[in-house]
Structure formats: C-alpha cells, structure tokens
Length: 108
View (cartoon, rainbow, N blue to C red):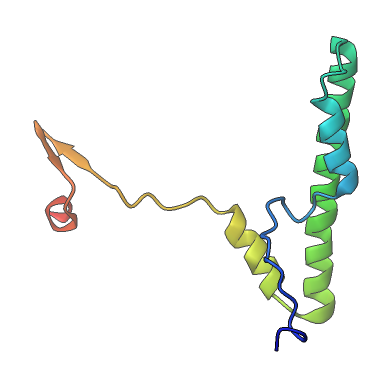
C-alpha cells in the first residue's frame, strides 16, 4: 500500500482564484526592499492594482461563460457565496438601561 499511495501533505490554496504567478511576482517586486524611490513604488502599486482588477474581471467572465456553456451553476454560486458578508449572530438590543441578547426577549 505504501508503494502505491504517495505520502504528501495537502495544501490549501490561500490566494483568490484569479491570482496567478505574474500577479504574485508584481506584488513581491512592489514590497521589495530595493524599491527606494517613491515614484517607482507608486508605478508598481498602480500596475499591481490594475493587473489584479483585470484578472478578477477575467475570472468573473470565465465563470459566466462556463455557466452559459456547460450549464454548471456550482462554480458561479461558490463565487457568489464567497463574496457575501457573514451574518452577525450576536444581535443585541438596548432598552433603557437593559441590554437584551435573547431572541425571545428581543422579539417582545
């Protein structure tokens, strides 16, 4: 069994799906200690932002095309779900001097 199944730790992809090697290289060049001149930093920063926005737009367009062609809504809805803000489960209501956190007391 050990000969057939490779032992390798799985790594979770941290970056967004539209971030590629070129964009990572630009980000690294931007924060390099060699960049002393502010004008160079600004140009690199602008190019990183522009490249990131373009890559994100390409990714969204690719998801839309995939939805149209393959009729596979899962990648599209995964992307939409990742863009939604989380819910705030800690809802409290202040009535006079009292702070209510229980759902039943808030409903009353």
